[in-house]
Image (tube, rainbow, N blue to C red):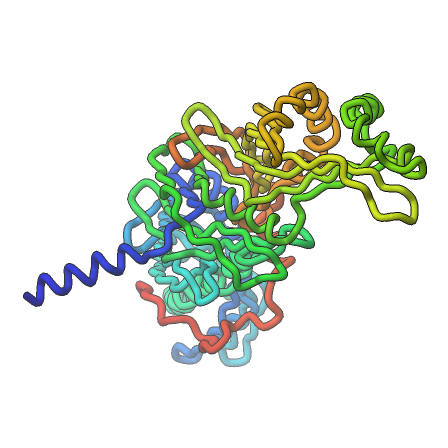
Length: 496
């Protein structure tokens, strides 16, 4: 009975789980590009290692090793891959570090000093980044585990007391190797928990699209890693800025990602586009008025001829007044995605009136317009862009079937007006696009769009438009310690 109750609760929770409107899959094919840029950044970070001074005594010899600096890092073999439960793993083997330090030796009354070069060889590093969702819905590095070891060190001692240094080299290099082991993991912990999180903070979560509408890219759950990809589920919902707490229930088909040939795949359900159109509808943006010279001349003449009987019954002061066309969407448009293509259904009212100066406008007719728009998606940079086209168009009267027959001659001119006056305005806005949740400095290239039943997927490769260090330096926090956390990194596992 207890097992049945647990199963029922699980099914109930699943039934109420929020479906994603947008999904992103990063495949293993992206890791080589990420590795190249990441290792370049990692080399620069490891070169900032500061090793404490090393002092000691052996018999009558007193030595002091100070000002130890890493001059160069050479990564011979490295690999980045996804690992379930660990998310992202970096493994470096057989690397080497070139160092330079100052030596000081005192033996009785003899003193020797100067600078010397050394190398740490057989450097191995294994770092795992655990990714999760924070309280605001943003992806973050939640934990960094690290293992690092230096197998051997060599120092090219010289000078007057070369033989003495060779005698002491075992003690000195062993001590330096121990200190170096202790410094690698804290640097990597800081790079992951602070610097990489500052990069991930550039991913939009809840931001404005324009002055009317915003978009919510909150993660619905922690990223899920497999051996070949990393999947992320985003809310992918638009909302009117004036009603920030409003949300459209997601009853669309959940997008599915199966492909792995490209570096990244992005999927959008019908809900993603429906929430956008309903948000603009609620914001009052889906309406248009054309008055006087804005009405195409040929259409103006045709409309005056069509409604000549109505016009001649008006007073002479109104007959020559400018014509006004008011187009207003009466219900939120809806998107339908099929393998054959994407269409948007729109129902609007079209009012034709005369607007005499300083007098109330005079309505000549009111009709309903049904339209079907085709929509083609594209990714440019980090923006999802849409190109709209008018596929079908129909008008009919709100009054009677007889009046609907009389409107047939207006069908073609009004369709032309929509194509000339309305569609360019819509496309100017939709082609500006909406940003996809990617960090700053990373863009999409070479995209391929595929339509499915209820959702569309876009496969693309990634391109670093800016260097990783450039973006991180721009967004580096002033206080590098994590909020509410100790500045000390977890104790590394290091071989001495």
